[in-house]
Length: 605
Image 1 (spheres, rainbow, N blue to C red):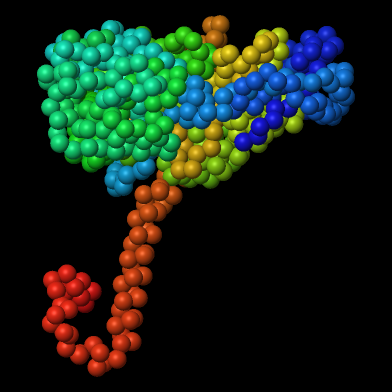
Image 2: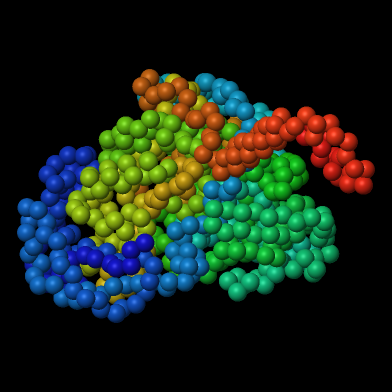
């Protein structure tokens, strides 16, 4: 982490000559053409500053030399002492307020199931009221007939237990602090705010007071709470919690007219899980039971809901924080539709990609493009060790090799030379004066996903408004932004940075994840995301998912453990072979032979 910000000091004191930016460069950038790639607009160069992301003060620092821009010269005037905007060093406050990392992310992996086949066929099954073939190349499919496991049935919840319209706008939050849902737990009901996380599978709530939360679930006050007699510990890449496992009734006020009996962990100990600035006091894991702790035999919240409410095995999510300040004072909101799809929450068609493994929502990425140009990496690099859709992850996280290629491509195609390394790594913010938005200077990023018809793909595209993210309260007259992409050690994670651009469908019944255009992914009426297809996959491998993801920490641990055991056994055998024959056959003193030593001796033989 870098502790010193840098930039052009003329921006601080307003000594840049008056000059308007070239308005045509933004358009040329999006097309990947023009001189704009090689020349920085004068006004942008003179207004850009970088600030350290980890500290907060307004103490002037010593002057820094201003770098000259090739071909433009240094016309900003003499440098004065810049002011550095710094955030609190205290780790928890930084992570909680600004959301660089979120609990629930890249949890320790479980052993995955064997890969199953995926059906080929027609592509999308949107709501029957829409033209299924509209906006596509080639013929579209016929409307789906209602069936027990199909999407058409998901639009009509059985028994009147669910009201999808009532679920619209039932989420609060933003990408920095997560999106959370109101629940009422126990008898009498206790109201809590629960983080929605598609990257884990346990349902857990605070079971004791904590300095960073305003309420918790008091199990002793609930007449319907029943303990199960064991604890559970869940560890994440950063953060962990331990709780008592029990069961109680839960009500979701927006959308359901009845209560449900579910397994629930009451957290009594945690580390870096509840953070300053959060507004939730529990977590709802919506991934598959394979990830549930302590084992997959513990029925998950959503499995219980499907069984008791008689709803289809599907849910969908809209996150409405596109282009809004991260961790702002307000709540941006969104919608979680449990049991189906709400047609008012999306536009056009839903494009589906198969779920490769039922643990996380693992999908298959085929390629990435920056400004319309492919990164030209082996498609297995995008899926090492897995590619998942995770609402609890703040950013778009990429395997290190992919991340490095993306940073290089974005820096090359943007109009900003000599960009601060700290901006890409997340330790610094990029700030502009005079409320200038930098989005027109950055390229689009496209992700290609394999279609249900494996010979085809479709493309989801995010504009800079989604990955160059404004930060609230950066200071004074500056508009500051962070890079909404970060490196990952063991997965490509499609987190809130991307999900805020789309309506995302988790169709567990048909083992697929769907993406559609979201009406709330707009700024001033202009969409900040795109979806298109189909495209041929002739030039892409038939399977881009590694057969054995040995980069998973758990699998590495198992591998090393087995090798260690084999090494010990081999050492013992060699030792026995080298012992003199008379020693191996000499009768032992009965006084030193006991059950334990005999057991060990016979086990090794």
